[in-house]
Length: 191
Image 1 (cartoon, rainbow, N blue to C red):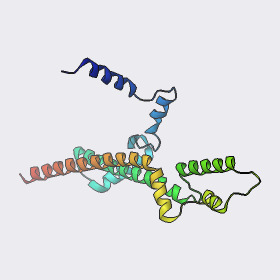
Image 2 (image 1 turned 90 degrees about the vertical axis):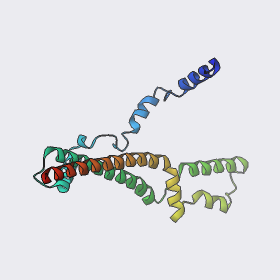
Image 3 (image 1 turned 60 degrees about the horizontal axis):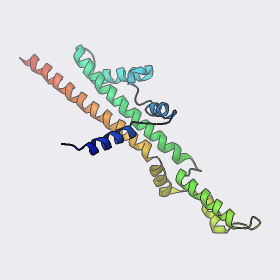
Image 4 (image 1 turned 135 degrees about the vertical axis):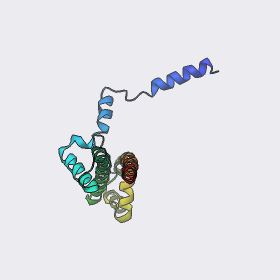
């Protein structure tokens, strides 16, 4: 049996973890899923709907029953969703990689803090030491730049990974359902 103290503690924890607290918080949280429009169904965009239908026709061909057409659409829809997720990931990484002045928020904060500390301690007429100026003007390059970008964008990339796993799972189950229906159709023809 749970003690009264533990019940009160659990209720207090539940009240503290019920989502955004500020007035702006809930509206901001509601827009998170719309950032890349990946939460929207494929059929909400006419262009994507056409792509789904074209891919479904390519998979199934002509002259099939409605059940097989619907199962094929589910496969195509999951595949288009998968492509959308991968495109969004590509956009995030390529934009950051193509920015010659890219700097992580963390490093910008460190550089600003260092500059403020030096300015507070020194005479404003004295030039800053060369190594400090070199550090303040440095930008990540090569593998370091890529690592910086991945670390900086980790939260966004993790969200995209969740969308990708969902799309892969939907595609896998749609393909399985399609295969079962196709085998059933072939078996009924043979009998």
